[in-house]
Length: 355
Image 1 (cartoon, rainbow, N blue to C red):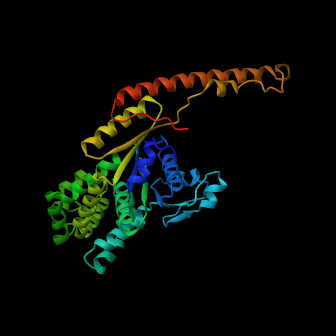
Image 2 (image 1 turned 60 degrees about the vertical axis):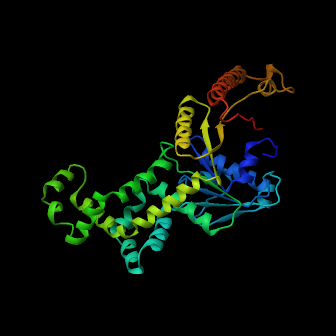
């Protein structure tokens, strides 16, 4: 990252927010940690914010765990790992429920309304499981740290969604629901007449139909929850709009991460097209987990110079031969894949080889 030609120097020194996106399992969290280290080596005060419940960032940084409150990784700790830097960097993990609590408390019209929402049974047990809630709260947390801290660069490791576009689409789907006039009329009816009146009586036709998919009690609890939450809808929409404006601004760059395989690369292309359509700038594309073996590295998989072949068993010799053949095959495959990726990206994003 010290080379002037590296796009990552430009990203880490010129942008305030860096968002790592890609399909699940391609190494976004490891890349996020690496960018945090890179920022530290450049003397930039950085926060790496992960939303990965598997705690992969902690593993990547050699920590037991990462909490929601901000933790500092010192320069001494990085130097002990062989990383030359004068400052460390901070890390934090998204806690959906805690972030949801803060957002509700901030957006509720008064303390009594906030308390009613926070004490709601559905909220306490199911709010963090709502579709899109993790992605929305990642945006809300990003909005918090952008406005409440003075970091030079904030690196966001996006949720490990099955589909990379969930991070961009799920919050918008939530906003579309909150803005829906039909949904708001429904909630006003529930709040005014009670959940067991009209169409939503337990023995009504609507509830009988819904019972095929969920219990009338569960659905009524969900309606009650949204009726309470409705006083915060405008605030949720405003927060999402602020973050979307930030993501489209020149302060932000996206880093697309894929593995060196056809499936995740296709997902990356699809995500890149979505980002272009949303007017969000791609700063780099990282093709992770690439094996570009040199002849020297392949030759290293040979009988040690101080050990003759006669001292090895047939199985050991066979294992060495198999490993060498596999390395050659993987190297050829990855080189061909990267050449195809280079051609498909054309002049949009030149590929850079990083040591």
